[in-house]
Structures are given as C-alpha cells and as structure tokens.
Image (cartoon, helix red, strand yellow):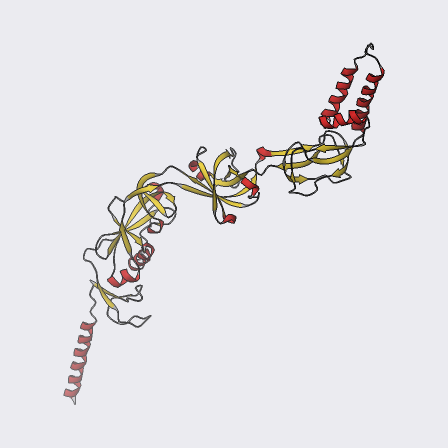
Length: 401
C-alpha cells in the first residue's frame, strides 16, 4: 500500500510538470483573432468573442517603441492602404456661411416735401415693384394749395397789367413756380395748372426712383410731416452676399480676389462676385467680422434672405499634400503612420498647413517618397494604444514645432 501511494505521487508530479511545459509563454509570440484583432493573448486558445482558434503572431525583434507590427489578416481586415507622398498643388479655400441682402448703395427713400394728409396710396403692399415716374400717393396740403393760388394769381396779374407796370411779373411767376417745384410738383403738373387755371385740392406725387417696396409705414388718412418717409425702395438688380468671418480667418481674405457665391436653394448654382466691403470693426463678444460680396441678379430671381455659401480662394502653390483622413489630429499636434516594412508601421509627428477640399498641406516632418498610410490610420492609432498602453501623440505640441 505504501508503494502504491508513492507511485501515485510521482505520477502526479510528472503530469503537472508536462502541463507546465505546455503553457510556457514565448515572449516573441502573441496570439490574436483574425475576426477580432483587439483580442491579444500570450498563449494559444480560442477567441473569447467568436470562439475561433487564435492565430500566432511573431513579434519583430528590436521593434521600435513607436512602431506597430500587424498580421496579414489584420492588414486586410483593417483595410490598411498606403501610397507614396508626392508634391502637388494646393490652394487655400475659405468657406463662409452668409445671407443675401439688399445692396444699400442702391436703396432709396421717398419722402414728403410738404406737410399734409395722405388721401390715396397707389401702392399698399410690401414687395410691390415701383417704376420711376409712377404715381405714388395723393396728398391734401394747405401750404401747397396756397402756393398754387399764388402762382395762378401771378399769372392773372400779368394779364391784367400792361408791360408799363413797374412790377416784374415774370419774376413773380418764376418765383411762385420754383416754390411748387421745390415742394415736389413736376414741370408737367405746373404747366397743366397754368393751362387749366384751376388748382385741385389734391396733389399727386410721383416716385423719383425705381425698386421694390421694403418699408411702407404710411396708410391712407395718415398725416405726414415735411421730410417724413413715405416708402423705402430697393433695387434688386444687384444684391449683397453678407458673410461672417472669424478674426483668425481674416488673414486669408484678399480684398482684391474674386469670390464664389454658392446658392443651395438653386441646386448649388454658383455666381462670381467681388468683395466690396470688409467691416473695419470686430464684434468683441463674438470675434466675428462681416464681409460683403456684390452679386449680380439678372431677372431678379435671387431674393434677400436666401442662405448662401461664400467661397474665397487663394493662389495655389506646390507643396507636399495628403488626404485629410491620413492625418490624425488632436488640436495640439498632428501625426501620420509611415510604412517601415511589410506589415510594420511607424508613427511620425508632422506640421500641417492649409486645407483645401479633401487635401491637407504637410509643412514638415515628411519628405517626398515616404510611404504613408492613406486609409486605416485611425485603426492603427487604436491598435497602438491597445497594445502599447500609451498614446503616441502624448507630450507633443504642434505649436512648438
């Protein structure tokens, strides 16, 4: 019985030693899943997620700290694609949101030259189009009626008195006529008054400008003071595209450059215009400035209030460029992944410049001919953080580069 107990103990230790040898960890090999590459084990077995057999991956001897080695399956599943960086052309394009507005240089205000009561308005709706010379309103004015009577009286006296009179009636007639003209009557109205010899209590005033009514604060029956505004008119043949620009973007605004105004309400139609005005004052609360681009409006199809995009382009220059997705940024620094071997990749800090469409300028950190990861850079970043336990961008500040 004693011999059986000793033999059992010896067999138990031999089995334990064999199992210990089987689970010996190879420091140069780790195991991962082709379906779930985030799974990393240091001994063979099955994936805890999909239960597939783990695939062994050999580590590269002397692997650099900022280098990452992937398996063939990881490269394929991660859609890692590379390309050679080359010199290309890039031009800065600034896209601003804006709104169409009236061209204030083509806005007019029609005001009353005499005090009186508005008896009739020929246009009563905002947006009505008024042609120059069209009748605008009728007014009853005591002062104007008295001036009409003075003019008719001067005409009558000239007929009664002979040329031998010491009074210069021509001068009196001209003085009375000038008063009527200054108070808003036109030559045709004065001539008709002289021809008929009768003064109507109502006087029709005509518009001295063309445009669409933007303001109409007078109603029939209202009294208007001398100099009071009757209507405000705007000419829509030219509009302003007013866009907001931050102070940090002002350096990219060239006063002499052409601007492209895109109209989302017209299927992205684009119109060329020129910068007419840059506000010299900056709002201290929002740090926003205002620019205006003059836009032609043939046929008056464009309406004030429509949203627009104002695109400003600078002169193109030749430099190293990459797709925007190839560059990883965190607000302080920028980084790309460079291919160093068959399945090995190394992160490299770069200094970036202007952006245009889907391209970004590389100012420093790379040279022409470097093989860069164009697709899958963020997957490499996540894999690196998972395996290395640190962010390669930590401690880097782009402003100091």
